[in-house]
Image (cartoon, rainbow, N blue to C red; front, side, top):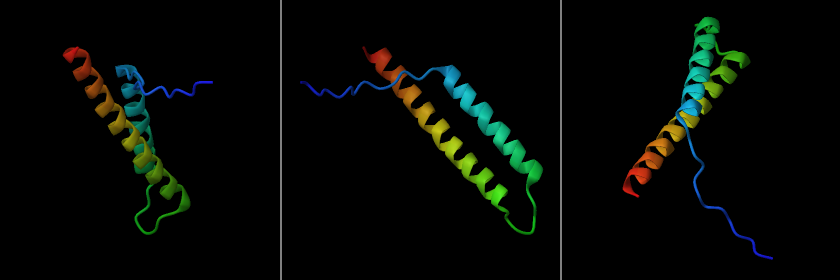
Length: 75
């Protein structure tokens, strides 16, 4: 039995980047609508956490999309 690992990067498309960006805008808008000035509730913490996760996913997708385009042009 051969256990080969597939090291080819996943193909990232513009549609996945746009979908992630839309989700980030929705989560940010929801946080701005419910944010309170005095203290942070659990819901606010989860919203900020979700915004950070989506921002990280979006940044990763953009970087991989740019790399994928560069490698496609080099070949």
